[in-house]
Length: 333
Figure 1 (cartoon, rainbow, N blue to C red):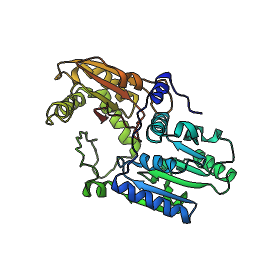
Figure 2 (cartoon, rainbow, N blue to C red):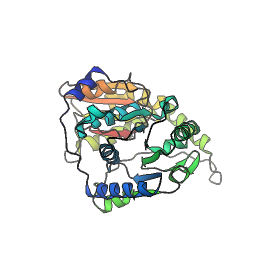
Figure 3 (cartoon, one colour):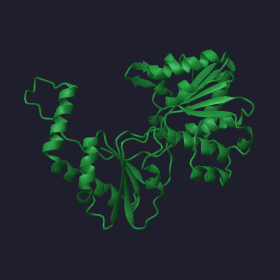
Figure 4 (cartoon, helix red, strand yellow):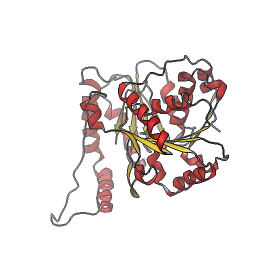
C-alpha cells in the first residue's frame, strides 16, 4: 500500500480538478492502444521523454472505472506524483479506488487474483530478472490479464535485450522518437552544454579497457580537481547568466553525480563554483531518491527562502517521469 505524508494527503483533499485533454499525438496513441488491446492481451507505447506518457495511463484508468488495475512505477516519487494526479484528473477516483499503485521493488509482495490490467510504467526495468519473475507471477495468478507498458528506452544494454519484444511480443501501439518529436514540434529542441576531459593514452596503439578508463578518471579527480572545478565554474556561469534569462540564478537545480567522490567535489567547491552569483547557496544532498521517502527532495522543493540558489546533490539519477515546475534545471556530473 502507498503511504502518503500528511502534506500529500492535504494536497489530495484540496486538489483542484483539471480536464484530461490529450494532445493530438497522444490522442492518436490512445486510440491505437485501445485498438491493439481489443485484439491482443498486451501492447506498449515507446515515446520519448517529455511526451506525456503518464497522461495516456491516466486516460486509460479514467476510461476503465469498473476494472481492477495494478499500476507499477520505477520509484516512490513518481508513484506518488501519479497517485496525486489520479485525484486531479479523475473526478470520481476517490469513490472508486480501482488502482493499486506499487513500485517494481514491491511488486513481488502483491497478492490477489482479480486484476484485469497491469500497467507497467518505464517497463524496461522488467529486464532485471527479479522484476521479470514478479511480473510473470502476477500474470500467472491473473488469467486473462492485459498488459500495457510505457517507456522511452525499450532496449536495455545490461542484459542486452529489447523488452518491447521479450515482454510485449513486439506489439507496439505507438512509437515516437525524440528526433520525430522535435521535427514535428511536439517538444522544443533542447540545449546541451557539455564539458569533458580526455584520458591520456601513453601507447596510441593500445586502447584502454573501460575499467582502466574509469581508474584514470578517478586518478584525475584526485590529482586535478581544481582544473575540473574551473571548467564547471565556466559552464555554470554560461548556463545561469548568459542564456537570455531562460534559467533562474535564484532557482532550484538538481546536480546528479555519478559517484560519491564527485558529489563530495561539488559539495566542497560550491562557493568557488557559484562565485559569480551574488546570493546565498543552500545545499541539499542525498545518496538516492529512488526508493527512500526519507530524503532531501521535499526540503529542496519546499524551501521558500528568498534570494538564494538551491542545489540538490544526488548520486543515483532520478531521470524517469518526475515533473515539478519548481525545478529550474539539472546538471549531470
